[in-house]
Amino acid sequence: MPAKIEVGENLESWSMHVAAWLVDQMNEVLTCRDRVRMVLPGGTTPRGLLETISGRFGNAIEWSRVDLFQTDERWVHPTDTQSNQRMIREALGSVIRDDGGATLYTMNTLCSDPVACAQEYHDLLNRLARDSDGYLMDMVLLGMGDDCHVASIFPGDLPTLHSDQWCVATWVEKLDSHRITLTPKALTSSRTCAFLVTGKTKTESLAKAWQDGSSPHEYPAVILSRHPSIYWFVDQAALGDNSIPSSSQIHRFGKGAQS
Image (cartoon, rainbow, N blue to C red):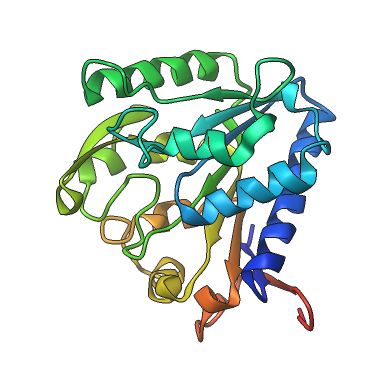
């Protein structure tokens, strides 16, 4: 199946379009399943999207039937400003609540060490996998770094790229930081995968992700870009002068946009 590339004219139209698409996707799953499982990334771009979903589409879905998971986490306290789970909770606001809200399954950074945290999350996903019908998740949302990293899978991290675990702990040398991350095994075990890419600093990494022959060892986003049901939601700033892959379906949205 060819990739579907959706290009927004600006960040505001991008956020509204992606939020509406995401809610439609979740509601479609809920017409035939009791619950929907979705993986959320950290970062600045996803935060704006999650705030749009909460603010504009908070009543558009039965959130009590939604299970949310993390792509990755920094080895920091859950209340730290660098914590992805803190960002997700703040951005989604009332969507995550005890009485009728979505359920957020977080990576427990209060564990004794990163390895124990990753093992705990792996065990959770392993239990879910036994009850699934071939896919671990319904949807996976991913950001992409300037170096083409996804989740906390960075260039050259071969053990994580080839792990048979659902979740692992990794040391990111360039950031001098421990991370907990889902592996490609987990991220590709989904019905639909969507990349969220905005800003002109992503133009070069986008070209590498779309380039035939790019190695996932150098550009980890490549391994997810081969997903059979892949969407790329990009803004014009990120697209820049990049050529659209010939096998892809492209749609432009926003004021004055043409497909």
